[in-house]
Image (cartoon, rainbow, N blue to C red; front, side, top):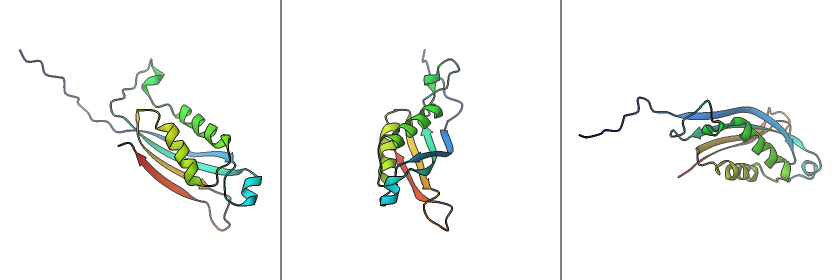
Amino acid sequence: IINFQKKEEYSYKRKVIITDLVFDTSIGIHDFEKEKEQQIKFNIEIDISPLLKASESDIESIVNYENIINKIKSITQKKHYNLLETLAEDIFINLFLSKNIIKIKLRIEKPEIIKNTTSVGIEITKKRK
């Protein structure tokens, strides 16, 4: 008798999405930016391993957006960053500690820094190899 593995009926592509998360933080290369915190806005899309199966009785069975938000808040409050890019890298390092995260698209904006703009910023996508 040959026992075949049950074939999955569906394939999954799951994401955690955090939109317009705003914190005040110390960031920038100019002296006035080092003296006063400014508003920074984050938009994040996190691709989750398709092997991770959500379970109602186990919060560890998901990538929890509240934990992601708390990690980003903690990182932004630890030190002054000169560059959005270095802040982004610290966020990537921290979030990729979870083996269930396979890809992160991170957009960081400074909405109040340049006149005549709604915001300026960066967008970086990083994927686990």
